[in-house]
Amino acid sequence: MPITSHKAFSLIEVLIFVTILSVFLITAAAIITVSMRQNTLRINMLKATHYNEQLLEWLRGEKDISWTDFAASGANNIVCFNTDTYAWNGVVSSKNDCPTTLGGIYRRYAEFKTTPNPQAPTQVETLLYTEWQESGNTFVTKLHSLFTLWE
Amino acid sequence: MGIKSKKSFTLIELIVAVGIVGLVLPSVFNIFFTIIRQQLILVAYQEMKIQGDSVQRNIKNMLQNRIAYISTGDYSSVDNCPVVNETTPIPTYAPDLYMKDRNGISVHYFSLPNPTPVASTSYTIASDSGGLKTYYLTSKDVSVSEVGFACYHNNDFTPAVVLTKFTVLKSTQFRNISLPYSFKVRLRDY
Image (cartoon, rainbow over all chains, first blue to last red; front, side, top):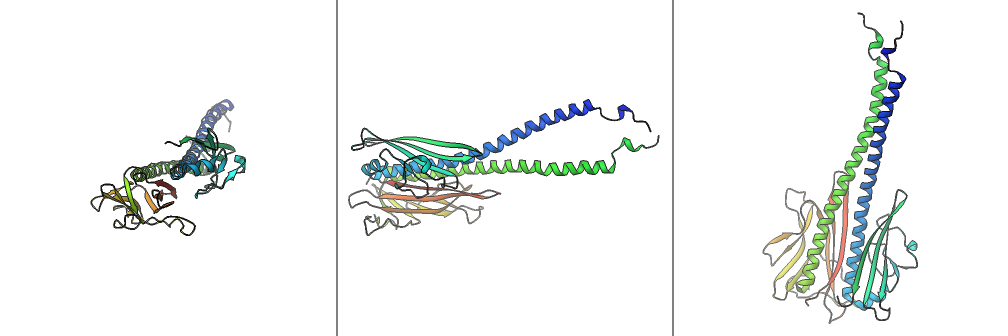
């Protein structure tokens, strides 16, 4: 039985088909990967924002109760707030000393800058950070706030 | 014209083709399923955050701007918040918060089951004013649990500090997720 060329695909035809198919598949795979990563990132970012806002609420409460204690507790320090119960005892020298234990993956810390001087502060600038690692990258959400004595 | 075998697929070819499709399809569906699940969880978190933030704003505004007298017992006691010192710790959380403003208008925050047909394990946080009308502070899409209030004074002459905590819950088809809230407010109109 003779094999005639028109009864099967030629190499060129197969190559073109495979190339077109692979372009589609690779694009689809890339889109899916990005989409999945973005979803996880947005979930984690939402939780991180929530952690930041909850810390800000607690700080507002502290400031409402006593400005003197609030200003003295923060006083130009970096403070680690790594549990759901808040306390001022987490002063660290560098943010890297703050463990990533909050919610399993997060590191939450705050930087305080008291002005004009630590003895009689009238303003406390706070920078709240919640940081986490995800697929090899470090992400951070920041919340910048200013507390004043006369507020 | 006789039927020649090479004009149609052989059984082996079909089995191989179906086998490959059978291997690829589940993984493709699995990927789509994962994406949909992530999307639903994300939407659930957004919903919970909107509802929880709204409750927090509501209670905070009420406490800071209107309330003069506060109690975790009932309306009859104007202020049952202890003065905290070395011997008296901050009290444990109570399920209710009773408040009055300067004009004697009363407000009460408490936990309440969501209206039917939602499952009876689903709760919301509600407020009523002198028992007149009950307002639900969350929609029935989410549940609120572990609602607690505590109040104290730092000394005899300072306004009461109110601690509030609650957890917003939502069960998606895939897992239950929660978002905890806690905040403290010092009364101003005291």
